[in-house]
Amino acid sequence: MPHIHEIATVTSKGQITLPKPIRQALGIGVGGKVAFDLRGTDVIVTRADEENEDPAIGAFLTLLENDIKSGKRLIAMPDDLAQAMLNNLRHTVDLDEEIVGEVAL
Image 1 (cartoon, rainbow, N blue to C red):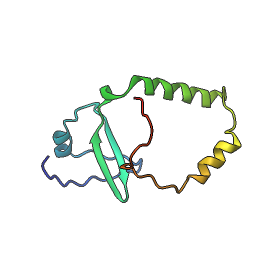
Image 2 (image 1 turned 30 degrees about the vertical axis):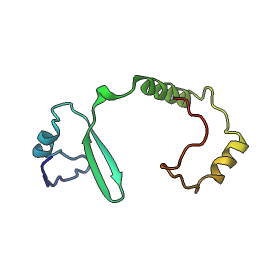
Image 3 (image 1 turned 135 degrees about the vertical axis):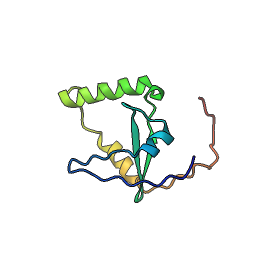
């Protein structure tokens, strides 16, 4: 991918126009989607390929959104679960650590 440096101006509505060289490099046309990821003080812009979204996750998130809006099936988190989460809040995880025991995928 070539190095391209472009500057966009933010409008009063918080909108920007993605510069043409960036759109071309990412292959984004009219109606295309982009994703913004904030990493520290850097914003990473990537093409968002909707066809790669997992339909099961989309359906679950829609169900969850509807439940939250309607107030259905919502219960308080059990105190012991909340406490366990708080206890592990600063627990470091080593992704390279060997897994002990059987693992089924």
